[in-house]
Image (cartoon, rainbow, N blue to C red):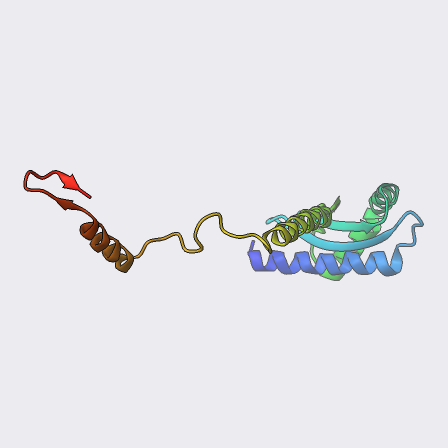
Length: 161
């Protein structure tokens, strides 16, 4: 099967499911649901719909039960609106991506706070040695001349200062 066609069909399934949940499914267990993605197999026989639920764990489990009970109605509507000969079976999976993103945001906030703390400590800090600890060629030439002037040797090669 053409990958572009499968992707378009997955996008259409995502739209149909989102519309169904918004307008036609009136289950009180259904929480504030967002359909985030849909994937379909290459043979178009199985579709996985990813969703997120705003709320507590109890609302999440209630929404999962509501989606499971409404699966047949949603599948019928998907088949009617897509015009496929064989409507794909639907499975609903809670999308862990927003939870992972929230965790990453928390970690980034902690890292930013630590960076700010280190920056505050570094404001009044000075280098332990010279500001520029590297030696340059012109400095080395001047020091070599000074050492030559300070050191003299006698005829036997002994150094005298």
